[in-house]
Amino acid sequence: MLSVYFVGRKNMKPIASLSLDLDNKWSYMKTHGDAGWESFPSYLDIVVPRALEFLKKRDLKITFFVVGQDAALEKNRKALAQIPKAGHEIGNHSFKHEPWLHLYSKEDLIEEFEKTEAALKEATGQMPKGFRGPGYSLSPTVLEVLAERGYEYDCSTLPSYIGPLARAYYFLSSPDMSREEKAKRKKLFGKFSDGFQRLKPYKWKVGENEITEIPVTTLPVFKVPIHASYVIYLSTFSKPAARLYWKTALKLCRFTGTQLSLLLHPLDFLSGEDAPELKFFPAMSLPIKQKLEFVGEILEAMSENFEIVNMHEHAERISSDNYSALPVRSALAGPS
Ligand SMILES: [Zn+2]
Image (cartoon, rainbow, N blue to C red; front, side, top):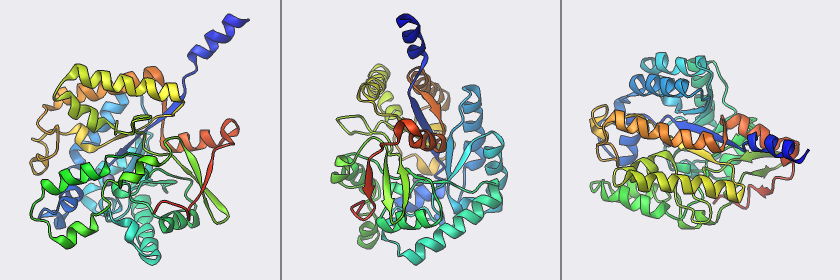
């Protein structure tokens, strides 16, 4: 009996979710303070088919967080329509992709959400059930608006201590940015105290409603980022070290009972040749074939340890019976 039980257990992997923030070329240029973003230059026609083919090969169904502004433009419609056709979920990644969304008034937020939902519905046929703020921006007002609009989950928190470091790197690589522009980006990538946030999912209590929060997983205990872009960046120094880092992250997640939620970015599917404007980003010099092979390795190791699902399924499954005791946090108590 016992052995049967263990055989059964062995095959039962914990769940983990996978998502791709479909940040477009213009949104990187805008945050970086580069000229030319106003015409919304796009690489979605390259990234989307490449990512879809990659995911199909590995039989993965994930969540694409799409920016409303992109969905509103005719030139992106063909690429975006392919995403739900391939069986993936569409999430809301704001309309204007401004990492200072936490500074918006409620009125502005409602307008932002109305426009995004309409554009996403039109371009993909899906109404988003989940939200990820640009640059991990979240505020009690954002949570309030999410609850009022019937969102089921949010995944805008990045429990990490290194936000201020990432921001410093950003500012160093954009020396012409004005003081005012820098002020808006004051909380870009988060603040040091974000490292004290919970790594495991929980619920936000917003008035009478509850929203499931699935944080972007960082390395348990150490709270340093583990999303694919960081691991790929490490691999440009040493592939064995990057592999070891990733395998350690997977083990620590399993050991601490942290259900991994891994984040992908378009730059994980692009090289400097595809987007010369973004060459300043780490790992953009890596040839595309090499990069994709390494992303493949990351996901293979992940699926050996976890059952990979999209964000909505992750949120639903942790809200089901087994996890009915998810901790609840008041939206008013944070995030600030
Ligand atoms: Zn983004």
